Image 1 (spheres, rainbow, N blue to C red):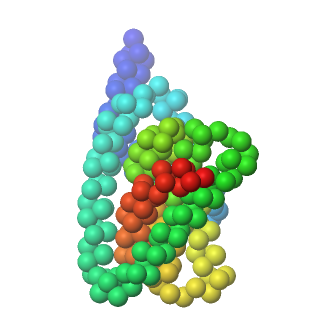
Image 2 (image 1 turned 180 degrees about the vertical axis):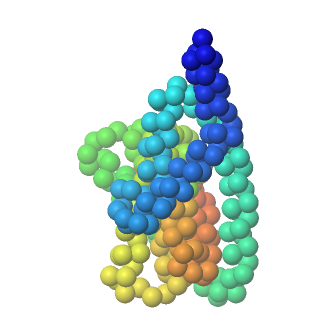
Length: 238
């Protein structure tokens, strides 16, 4: 009887909001520490922490809805993080204004290349319209990408996975490619990471500097807007 009571109490504790929230943050911090120590791409904190949390939920029988409700504070903090990006943009507004034409042109070209390349590759392999619609917005931040995907007949969950993997890949490989191409412009670096790797790329850009982070944050918004406008048009043409 005592064992049963203990197990019941442990189950209540594990399923509580404070435990799940603390567990999530703790796992991410440990995953970040591991990644910084090893620098192995497959151990990126988003991959590692997601894998550990999935295993934990399956082992404990906690539903996704319960977990999502308990960790709602993390979702809420996305709001202040967006405001922080806006402040970074405000501080670099003079540089952004001086390079407005270059920034918009670069994002438009990047969006067109990203959309067309995905469509051509998917059609080459004959994967079908559903997969095509799911993968086209791969370089757009997750909420916008899922909306674009679902409107075009794609699968939102597949889009979310592809977007996250694209961001991780871009944040790891992007700086290496920029170094090899000897790209030194801070604005070009920010544009490249923000346009190709959205939020994860922007986090990396902010590590490089204030200008890179501000431009990358701007590129996220522009990429989402331009991609949403161009996807239906390009699909009709192709």
